[in-house]
Length: 181
View: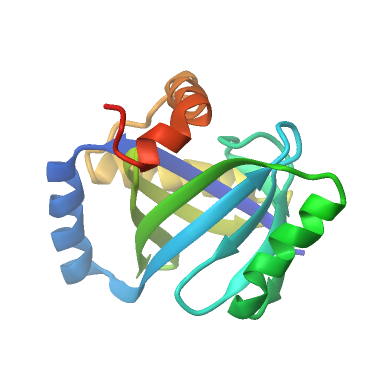
C-alpha cells in the first residue's frame, strides 16, 4: 500500500524561488496555487489541521516534522468545518502550538510533486514529494535527491531545519505579525 510520504525540502532565497518558478512553468505541469493555514497541535504528536483555498483536513504524520519518510493519514472535511475541527481538538485537550500561513505553488514534474512555498515569518522553501511503499521509499528518496542535484539546490540539513523550526515555534506570533526580523 502506498502510504509513505517521501519528501525532501530546502530553504531557498527569493531569487532562487523566482528562478525555480520560471523553470517549472516551462518544464512541469502547473497543478494549483493555494493559500494554506495550518495549525499544529501538541508538541510531540504531529497532529494538524489545515484550511486551503477550497478544502480543509485533519491529518497526522508519523515521525518528526522534518523526517524524510512519514506515514500520513488524512481526513478531508468541508472548508467550513475548519473552525469546528479546532474547537473539537481543543475540547479533547489538544492546544494549538504553532500556526503557519503559506502561499504554495504546486507543479507535477514527471510524477514528482513540487511545491514552491512562501511561509510568512519562515521563508521560501522548495519541496519535492512522492508517495511510496515501505519497500521502495529508499529508491524514491535517492531519486528526489538526484532531482535536487539537477536543480542545483543544496539540501538543507535536518539540523538547520530544526534550528529554524524551533525559532519559529518560539516566535511565530511576532513573526506572522511582522514584529520581529
